[in-house]
Length: 442
Image 1 (tube, helix red, strand yellow):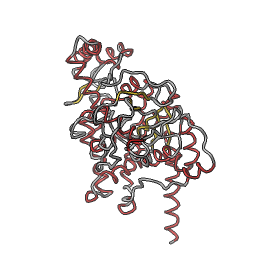
Image 2 (cartoon, rainbow, N blue to C red; image 1 turned 45 degrees about the horizontal axis):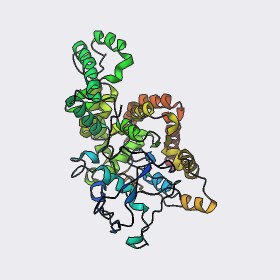
Image 3 (spheres, rainbow, N blue to C red; image 1 turned 135 degrees about the horizontal axis):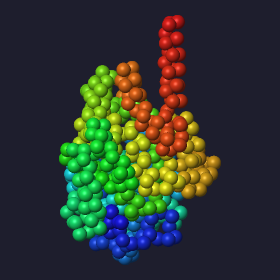
Image 4 (tube, rainbow, N blue to C red; image 1 turned 90 degrees about the horizontal axis):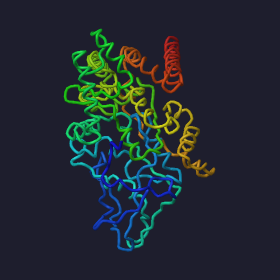
């Protein structure tokens, strides 16, 4: 089943290229300098070379990303992406996070208009042009061993626009394969609704619904769940990317969720509204909203629901790593997905980057090339935290309790106890104890 048939993708990738690339006929007035920068950049239009493709060739090279750095926000992804692109065999795109697969392709409210597939390709084509050559003698800096990647941190978790789009297609075109599948899901959904009284996997209040759910365990992901004006399907962005790029390499950098949440709050919230006390109130309010949702719906439904996400005062959902990674591991083979802890990356940048290069199948660097990568300055540090101060102890305590079962689920999913972050919590407790001891002697 091809659930993500994109206009313009229906061609074979070049077999001699490691990266998914192909040649296509050049369109008239295809101007490299304009690409889709204005629509994709989250800051301002990018100034690029304004050379036109000349008539010396009827074909141009087009490439999609070979790898995806899928997140999460405030987990050092900007720094990781920068060091990946410092490898000589990696071609850096003009934008780290185009957010095309999750948002920008759908237009408002994510972009002023839908960003086309061709414009998305321009993000990866633009850097391939030698800027120091004349416009009529441009040369590709691309070789069959080079790769490029997409560093959008929304790719892991923001599937709501995709689900809504697929829902509309499936519910309107009943004669298509997807429409027939939707009919099957709708029948199963109706059984759920008649038995339990609402959409979702609620077994907490209706004992009769337990039997139905147990009987449908084999097809439980063939349901769809609706929460207010949102729809949550079994399909995610992972399915869409896999349908087009099944051999993609995936990298997920994640972080102890409590500290990640506070860092995210400091980074994305307006400075005038920042304070540990405001954070504490937002945490308690957001957890209450989350619990209200999960009383009626599954954790997965609530995690993907955009209406709920937008109502939260803090981004609780971004730290529910197991809920999102499980969907990726259902689609991609585990060997295609590399999950890293930000804490381990900070402790040993050089070793972590080497493991990423191996995962991407890149050659080992020379000694001089290693120096360039390892000595690069750290990017995107959060400067607000020292002036605002630490979160309140009450906030930290309630958040640790909130994330504890999800951390345990993640450790079970990855078969790695490090993802319960007990070592990080222990270090934090030891540090706090040392500060208390020092202050008592002051």
